[in-house]
Structures are given as C-alpha cells and as structure tokens.
Image 1 (cartoon, rainbow over the protein chains, first blue to last red):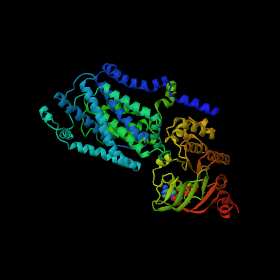
Image 2 (spheres, rainbow over the protein chains, first blue to last red):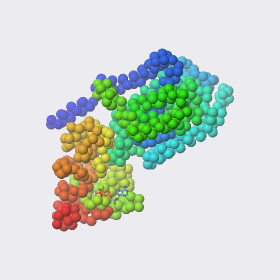
Image 3 (cartoon, rainbow over the protein chains, first blue to last red):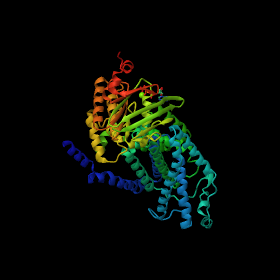
Image 4 (cartoon, rainbow over the protein chains, first blue to last red):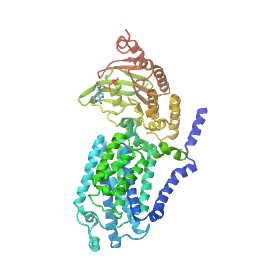
Length: 369
Length: 238
Ligand SMILES: Nc1ncnc2c1ncn2[C@@H]1O[C@H](COP(=O)(O)OP(=O)(O)OP(=O)(O)O)[C@@H](O)[C@H]1O
Ligand SMILES: [Mg+2]
C-alpha cells in the first residue's frame, strides 16, 4: 500500500509544472528569436561591417558543426561529405530566390526590407534547401548506414565529389527576364553556372537569419541530447549491439540522424549562398570544406554541442587572425588534427557540455539543476 | 504449462566456422531453464540467435508459436524477449538512470515504466544509491546488476541472461541468483547461460548441456545435477 501511494506521488511529480513548461519549452523558443534580434540590431550595427561578416561566417559554421555532430558525435558514425549537402541546399535555395525572384519581380535583387517579401522568399528557399538536402541524405544514408561504419565515410566522400562534378557540368545562368519567364522550371534547374558558380543571387543573408538558424540548430541538438529519443542516438555510439538488444532500431535511428544532419547542412548552404562576399561554386564546397567541418567536430568533442559551437568559432576566427600565413592553413589544420588525436582523442570536451566541466561547473550549477 | 520458446534444428555459422550443429531446446512458461557447457560450446551463440543478433543458417525458433528466427533484434524485444548481453553491454558514458531509461525504450506506458523502475531498484538497492553515476565507473558486479535491471525494464516475458556470474565474488553471485529466483517467482521466464553449473542447476527447473554446438544432455535440473556425466565434467566432482 505504501508503495502504491509512493508511486502515485512519483507519477504526480513526473507531470510537468506550469512553471517548468514555461522554463523548458517557451523560454528557449523566445530566446531563439530574441538572440538573432540582438545580433541584428544590437551587435551588428555597433561592431561594423567586417566583424559582422565574421559573425555571419561563424554562425554558418556553427550550424554546420552542430549538425554534423548529430552523426559523427551523437551516433558515432563517420561522415565526411557535409559540404555535399551544403551544396545541394545552396543550389536549391539559389534556384528559388534567383529564378523565383525573376518570375515574381523581373529581377534577382533583394525586395522588401527586414522580414519583407524578399526575405519571406528567402525563408521558403531555405526550407526548400533543408528538404532537398534531407532527401539526398536519405538516399545516401539508407544504403550505407546498413553497412559497417567505415563504408559511410567512403560513400559520403564519394557523394560530395559527385555533387561537385555534377554542378561543374551545369550550363550558364540565364540573365534575361523575358527569356527566364519563357523557360520552363525543369530546364531552369540546369542553368546554375557550372564551374564558375551561381552568381547574382540576392544578398538576403543577415545576422538575423543566420543567428535564427543557429539558435534553432543548437536548440534542436541540445534538446535531442537530453531526451530519451536522443539517448537512443548516443546509445548506438556507446554500444551498437546493446542498443539493438534494448529494442532500439539502430539503422532507422542512424538514418534519421543522418537526414536531420543533412537538412541543417542544407540550411547552412542556403545562408552561404546568399551571403555578401561568398560565391556559391563547386570549388568552395568541395572536400576541403567537408574536412573543415569534421575538424570542428573533432576539436569540439564528438557529442558535445557547446564544444562544437566553440570549435566553430575558433576555426572561423583563427584563419582571420592568421591571414598572413593563409597558405599554411591546411598544414596547420592537419597538424592540429594529428595533435588532437594523440593528446585528446575524445575532443576538447568529449561528450560533455561546457557547463559540465570543472571551471565552469560552479557558474552554471544553479541553472543546470 | 505451455511452451514459450522452442528451438529446433538450429544451425548457426560465423562465416566458415559452424558454431551450432542442430540445437533443439524448449523453454516452458514460468520456468528457469539453464544452458551449461564449456568454453566455446555455443551457449552465447544460441542466445544471440534467439535475440535476433545472429541469423541462423537453418532451423527454427518459435516464441509462443510465432516464428522469430530471422526477425530483427529490435522487433524481438517488442515481442517480450529481452536480454542482458554477454559482457554486460552497459552504456559506459551514460548514468545508471539513463541506462535504465533506455531499457524501457520499447514502452510508452509512463506509469508502468515508473513502477518497473522502482522494482528494479528494489531488487538492486546498490543501483538506487548510484543513479547519477556513470555506468562505466560501476564495479563489475554493479554493472551486471545494471544489465539485468535494465533488461527487466522492457518488462520481458522471457529474460535471456548470458553468464550473470562472470567475474563476480561468491557472495555477489549468491545475491544475483537469489534475485533471479525472485524475478522468476514474479512471473518472468528465464533462459540462463552459465559456466557456474552448480549454481545454475540449483536455481533452474530444467537444464541443457551443450558440447561443441550440440545438445548432449537435457533433463530436470535436479536429475542433471546428480548425473555422473555432469558431476564429472561440469561440477568437478567424482
Ligand atoms: N564473432 C565470431 N566469429 C567467429 N567465430 C565465433 C564468433 N563468436 C563465437 N565464435 C565461435 O563459435 C563457437 C561458439 O562460441 P560461443 O561464444 O557461443 O561459446 P560459449 O559457449 O558462449 O563460450 P563461453 O562460455 O566461453 O562464453 C566458438 O568456437 C567460437 O570461437
Ligand atoms: Mg559465451
């Protein structure tokens, strides 16, 4: 009897309190919208153009690193083709804003101001980017994730290269409004500029949009990590056989992680495509870019969301500081990676988050519990 | 009493190595059945085939009359067979609580999970004291307790255990076997693989002796414990 009532009390304790609901669900969402506004209207204007551009690059890399971490960190698989999904997303979004813009307004310039019609088209384009990258993620992931771990690395590497070569084969961009209006959508799909890149895209990428997607990506990843569902991801990395024995459909979960990860890479591709000072071309989104994202995840700690955020910041800012020795960047990367593998194979933070590590623990304690 | 699990003519190979050469075995509902045999006899292989981690070459496995050979491991768990795998397989970087939580992965009845969580913690009070400790830092015996407790959270009809006594101090082994009895009394059927034939035959209703991939003896556990063959080879007497 005593146990019965004890159970009831426990069950009641499990039901969330209104304040807890507010704290756990509403507040993070509010933060996800307020943070981008602060970046856009507060930080951006006060730091000036060049630092703002660096903040855009940081944000895009955070989205890339945190999303790749879902696969390489959470589920312990090894994908090295993230730039391929970024390219799929970038070109998809570019098609929507460029040719969509032409069809609507007769040109490919930005239309409307903050949150205006043009930015809404950009939002649609970014969602389309996420969906198409996710679809490619499914096509690539389903067959290779059934096989042993290392096949994924090979297949993703090959995928990235195939995407790059395919894009090189595309034809010139159409620039004439009447011609574009007369061309059917399917034939426009192929007019994305080939090796020269998809130029002339409207510059919609702003601090607001970048940091909105950063907030959403980080929110999804950190939520996932502490949920039962996310724990299933982590259990695969811990011990795949034991996970299967717990009734976790390991292949399905791996594919799911891969598709989610690809979707966010697609978002990053869209942000990259519409940024001032970047060109969406196959060379930019090749193996080197994929490798850079892998380095961020390895540096940050396979499985640590905050670690990946920090690593993305470091990897973006360091080359900016070392512009003079730019040609040695890849050498420096390779050396860093080798050193990390020897000294701290689990990454700076391993699976842990910043607030779980000693010097910061005290700072965060009141919030964490 | 009805038959819960029936294995017949089970052949399993690891590539070119054939590990099982036609195993036949039956587990009646409500019993503890033990599978004993020396190293490499094929005990773990048999369990892995039942839980779907290995696909048999030929032969059938039925659970309550339904064919389960060739089914996916995670679907078999949903039917009511869960296991504490050999080598325990706890998730080392997760806490005890998180490990137990994953044991209930296939269920969504919150209240039932909460009460089974209590039950597992009542069975293994040491786990209750260590709920927030990382499973990798538990002692071997505690990890074994966690593996069993976690398997119970799937609320299995049939519990598969692979050498729960492995590497444990005698008192801990005695505790674990007492707990297995309790688990069985509360209605869970158990298929128990053991090296420790003495303890296994003491708690079990029925026993099977496996030698190089074949069942060579099977009988009532009490009878087996008395047989010359078993006394000589597996109990080290006579
Ligand atoms: N993954 C594998 N690859 C190849 N052969 C294997 C594999 N696993 C087991 N075997 C072989 O299959 C046979 C049966 O192994 P199994 O693990 O079932 O034995 P066991 O009865 O559980 O032994 P133990 O008491 O030592 O755990 C052995 O000869 C073993 O070498
Ligand atoms: Mg074994």
